[in-house]
Image (tube, rainbow over all chains, first blue to last red; front, top):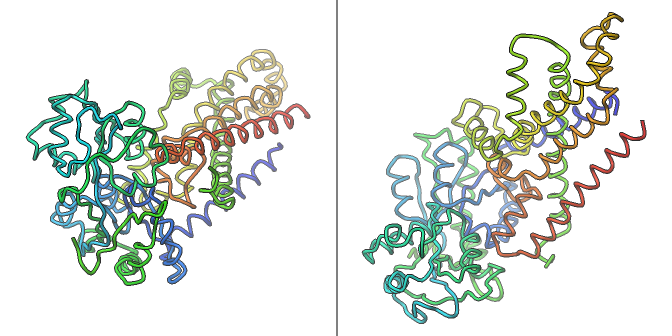
Length: 278
Length: 217
């Protein structure tokens, strides 16, 4: 390639990027910091086209753990948040970062593990007892360890059980993998370990192998998804009008119906709950 | 297994991967070719230090480059006003940072030998630095092409940096490598592996095309 051709190509590519960047900065696209469970389960991909068609607003979704999503928003890098860790959310709002927190949907967490079930927890509705049994038999347990909503729930349950899993089993049966839900499920599947998953990710997960749902139905396993706007008193919020429009759409009868209609393999993943928060 | 993917979606992912990686390679080459040649040809204080640094940066960890750029490009960071974070532009920038030392270091090595051989003649001829560099790059063009391809290899296979500064946004900043990581995390291992083979195929095709073009001249 000769020099003039080379620079022409560089220039064309640069123009291409400039136009992409221009699209990004228009008010018609917003960044939603969300969790892997909502994005990777396919929910947002299923419901966003209807919103975009109605309003012309494109929603760019970042799938992060709840902790990271709140951090991203606190750094002004997202326009609104959709997460599932009530304690972290309250802190975020108390710190003056977030406003107008509303619940949009719920489902539940489940304890999954190998069919052989060495800790004999199958069929229990007591998540804390299940964790105690796992720790008691020193059966392998995979922890997210990434400050996500699921990770926070797991640690709350250990606290209720009165067990410090890091002290009791780090380096042996308690495996903190520092990764997303999918990575944790892959890891549990490969090592015959237990783990805690949100139901949405579990239902849409494609590598279940010998893993199965062993404990469910504990009220402490409730999994609530909240939408939160950024506080204009603390953040520049250049796109708050569009962000609010999306939050309101999620809470509207239309958005709620779209959430409720999303199914994987015939099972409903998220229960809309805007009118009757759990 | 491919049902999860619409052709248009796959097309966008492949297109974005190629656009980002090729743009980053072009940027890295624009910086790296003259810099590498200058390191071989020009004599200035601190040159040895620069050569050493360039070679050390061959091993720049993508995840660290991604994190550093993330902090700079964040809206609350020093370059936040550019509004580049979570856009393809940020991904080009990150990959260019990673590929530039590779191209610079390899071009420096490629030019050293012809410079020793023809440097005296070029100087006698009264050639300027710029002219010397252009002549030497032409003489060593095969090694220079390999340097550029090595840079492209780094960018197209990289996942750590683009994941952090791009955000893996569906239909916007999702590339081949971030899709493979994502599908693996969703337990769709067959699909992830299939995408991996497509990526390898594309890399081979680009390298082969560049190789053929380079041989022809």
